[in-house]
Every structure is written in C-alpha cells, then in structure tokens.
Image (cartoon, rainbow over all chains, first blue to last red; front, side, top):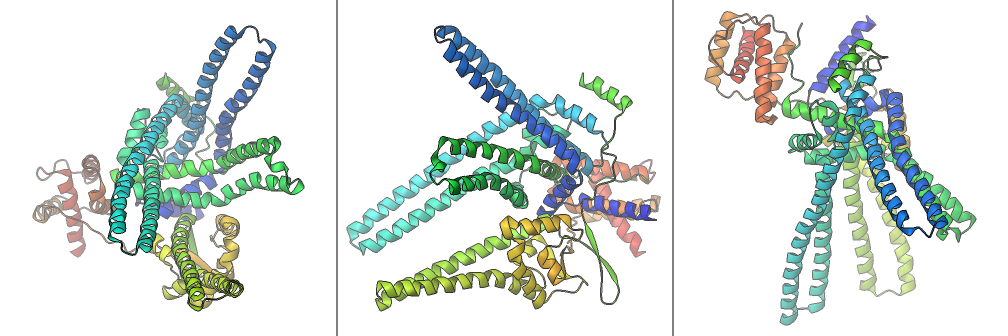
Length: 341
Length: 287
C-alpha cells in the first residue's frame, strides 16, 4: 500500500518536472538534489578541491625551494635561468591539469544530478569514468569561456565608454551654451553635475549587468559537456549559447536567487576570515598592518573560499544540471514522451 | 578506447549509488481544514521564497532610500527656513534621525503586514514567485498572522537569513520561525494555466480527426498520452524549428504505433496528425 503510494507521488514528481520550471523551482529542485545526495556530492567536491590545493601547495613549496637553491649557488646564473624556465613550464602544465581535474569532478556532480532528473540509471563509477575522460575538454571549454568573457569585458567597456563620451561632449556643449547665456549659472551647473553623476551610475550599472548577462548565458556550459556524448569544448559553449537564447534574464535571476540561498553559508565562511582578524586587532591594535596579519588574512581568505566552495559545490552543480534539463525541456521538448504501457 | 571501457564496466558492475531510493524534487504538505477535509498543497520551496524575498527587499530598499532622501531634504529645508542656530539644528537632527529610524522600521514591518493582509498572504515578490502564505488549516491569513510573521522576520533574517534558512531547510513543512509562531505555511499558488493551443489549420485538423475516429476508437490512448499531445501543442511555439520537427515526429510515430495504425488515412505532416488527434479527443469526449 505504502509502496503504491510512493509510486504515485514519485510519478507526480516527474510529471511536475516535465512542466517548464519556475525560477524558484529551478533553485529548489537543485537544492533538493544536493540535500539528498549530500554525502556523495561532498565526497566528490572534496576530491575536486583537493586537486585545486595540490598545485597551490606545489607552487609555494617549489618557489621556496627555488629561493634556497638560488641563494646557495649564485655563481652559475645561466643554468639557473634554464632550470627556472623548465620548472615554470612544468608547473604550469601540472597546474592546468589539476584545474582540469577540479572541473571534471565538478562536472561529475552535474552528470549525476542530471541522471537523477532524467531517470537515467548509471553507476557513479561509470559516470566518473566518462567525466574523467573529458578532463581536457573541460579545461578547453573554460579557456574558451574565459576568452569570451574577456572579449565581453573589453567590448562592452568600449561600447559604454563611447556612450559616455558622446554624453560628455553633449553636456559640455550645453553647459557652455548656458554659461554664455548667463542663465542662473550655479544652479544650472549643479543640475548638470547631478545629471552626469546619474548617467555615469546608470552606465556603470548597465556595464555590470551586461557582463553578468554574458556570464549567465554560459552559466551551465559544463553540463552539456558532462552529459552529452560527442560534444567537444567548443560544442558545449555553442550549445549553451544556443539554448540560453531569450533566457538571459531568467538565468541571471536564477543565479541571483541561488546566490541568495547560499548567502548564509557564504557569510559564515567569511566570518572565519573576519573573526580572527578582529580578535587580533583587539589584542594588539597595531598588529593589523604587520606582515603576519597580512599573511594570516590571505591564508584565512583561502581557507574560507575553499570551505565555501566545498559546501556549495553540490548545490551549484545541481542547479546547473536543473537549468540544462529545464532548457532542454522548454526549448526542445526532451521530456515529451509517450509512455509505453 | 572509451568505447571498450564502457562495455567492460557494464559487465563488471559496481556498487550502485544511483539505485538508492528515488529522489524527491518537490515537497507537498497535507492540511486539514476546519471541516476535516484533507487538502494537499505543493510547498513553496526555498528557491521561490528566496526569489520573493529578493524582489520584496529590492522594493523595500527603494522605498527606504526614498524616505531617507525626503527626511534629509525636509530637515535641510526646515533648517534653512527658520535659520536655526547650529546647536538647535543638531538637536532637531537627532529627532529627525530617530523619527526616520522609526519610520524605516514601520515601513519594513508595514510592507509585509499591509500586503499579506490585503492580498491574502501575498506580497509583490510572492506574487511574482507565485507563492502564498496560508494558515495551517488552509484558510487565508489575516492581520494577526501577517503581523507575527513580519515581526519575527527580524529573527529569521538575522545574520544573512541564517535562522530562517536553516529552519526551512531542515523542517518537513519548510517553516521559518515566523511561520511556526503564526501557524502558517507558504505554498505554491495553484496556477491557472491558460492553454494557448493553436491549431494551425482548423479545417484540415477536423478532417484528420474525422478520419482518425473512423479507423480507430482511440481507446488505447491514456489520458496521459493526450496530456502530452496537448502539452506539445501548447508549448511548441517556444521550441526551435528543428526541435519542433523532431518532437512532433517522435510523438506522432509513438502514437501511431500505439494506435496500431499500419497506415495513416492520408499523407499528412506530423504536426497535423497531432492536431487532428487533439481535435478527435475533444470530439470523442463530447460524444
């Protein structure tokens, strides 16, 4: 009886999932998956972050080692340069590989979440084998995304600068006109100043929103890479752009709401940074400017960032999977299937 | 290489995490009305609540900035008009500060109380997010519940919403402190979905429907199947052209197989077939 009841409720769950989801439901469903898969996702997230920590530790230890070596043998300068270059290239490749591993593990979470949504049965081991084999594609995709983002930053920057320049020229012309006409100069100037400030603020806001809009369009771009077969780095980026057409604002709102939901965790994480520094300052008011305080604060910052990433990765990767699932459904009717009896 | 590994893994098999109990994506709540009727509602969900809160706080921020500006402007005018001495000004300034602080708090609480009472459990943000506050017995909330919820919001939103967040996340009924005290729950507004089914060519679709009804009773098709057809027809406008083609073809083929139609009555597009089926279902019901 209770089994049959469960059947019914789980059926209605998937019926609801088949409908286009509301903004809030995208976030709620993502959180529901992350919550129920908490232990599995945390394990993967931990592995993912470990891959980030490795190159970090490597670089710190390596540079310390280099400094010692350089001090010890100051006579053979030439061979040292070669060694340094070699070490630099090696550590760069290693760091990139580790970053790819970080992305691949994050992608694994999305794949598992997507499997849950689409009722696709796959063992975790199989899933991780697939995402692991795509490590370099993840790296490639994030590289392409980075280039697009930089292009957007520069391109939009130019556009908004030009708009402001045109406005500045116009307003200068008007001001000059006013001052020669001798019409209550000071208040006119005040209005002009206020107007300029408002225009600048609006333009800056527009620039910010524009950049975030571009980011939102690619927000879920690693999910197609995790889920689809035969899709490369560029293919995944292409797919994201194609699917998110007309959904830019919606995706922006989803990420904002997601950010709001993780805010308590983020704030707690930041407390780790702020609290010891405050205590330090209380103990010794002059200490905050010391090298020790600077080192401590950057270390705490790192720890807090890693901790926040660890705690929120399952959520974000699940939300991305839900976004992709929902977009496929809305734009391509993926879930519209006649069931066999 | 990837291919081979995939084959292998299938035969070996491994401990299966994905075969754990099925996940629940949405939560519901069962309420008992004063008349002892059990009702089931979908809970709002933390995403929709955060979305509503975001919108409401945005509106509140705008209102508060407006109030601060006006208060500041009034103080300045007051000072300039009466040409008051600086000591007096600072005393009045304190008063104005206190009054505007009180005003801000009243706006904060009043906003939620006003809207949730007036709109029976909704605020502008909740309207946008399509959620609503109701009493635990399913009745709409009134002034006392709205006030309790608004006052306790101070605790729920303490330290970046930590308290409310944890309570909603942990509890089965997704209640924050204000909900516990006021005896309310936040549910999803049942949407009256407006079906915008567009039949492209009515006359043709009717022809198809007629032909389909002649060669089949359509009895093998379940209401769910028709629901899918209906959903496709109402949503196809949003699809990309390619998707419209593949989905209509897929559905048409699946339905044709299910209906055991060896041949179609006459040549037609997949979209027309689905339209005809939809019309036929409507006619069958009215028989």
